[in-house]
Length: 310
Ligand code: MTE
Image (cartoon, rainbow, N blue to C red):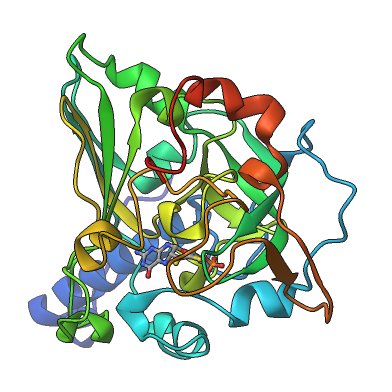
């Protein structure tokens, strides 16, 4: 039987402490990188939004070309012309992002955007959207009814209205350095309008994550109202007892009412609302009452004078 011998270690093989510690740190960092690579990555603007299923919300209308819907935008936080949002909104950081849902609710909560994305199944819904400026578009949005979120926070008996507030960050949103509008951008709905199944919390369009200029990481789409009711890049949803004053009401109370239902019979003080031009098309077409959604929503306004409550 041979005798066990203690192994001989050459002094040059002994790793100095600093190098050994640095190696351990490097190995831990490498493991972290691997774990990060394994974690499900959050798709970014322009990438496919997974898990979106078809819905019953389809239309006979032709879809607006993607390039028109994503390059002809209103997003005053990035300038007042139609091209600036696509040019400047790339700098908006949409992660991390939280949405506070608060006010007249039993269960107020601050949602992380990636948690909110998983709150309900994402549906593709093809909606018409008409801007007060008499252009319109038909877009396949992806999201779920805002009601899914509102139900979870349990509105109190006092809740009658819902206010939506956009991010306020002039460093990322250069338009907020101008006093043209009162910032942050605010919009509001009556609670029954907000709870209506058509009212969509959208995270994507055309099967992709919302481009920043279209209101990433989440926006509202209220298809029977003029586009300005569809607030973009929302950070706060507040349930209220009293009707809030929205940004456009404050900017021009004679021109922009709280209701803002698409109504060809009520002209804007400076132009007719009887017709509209679809982005990508040449000829105008008649504007439909409630933007074509009268069957779904007209009963919400039964008995109201829509000439006065425009
Ligand atoms: N949301 C914010 N935060 N800021 C805006 O300037 N513009 C509104 C609405 N939401 C706006 C906004 C207007 S006037 C319209 S017509 C629609 O966004 C335009 O949406 P789109 O650019 O996706 O077509």
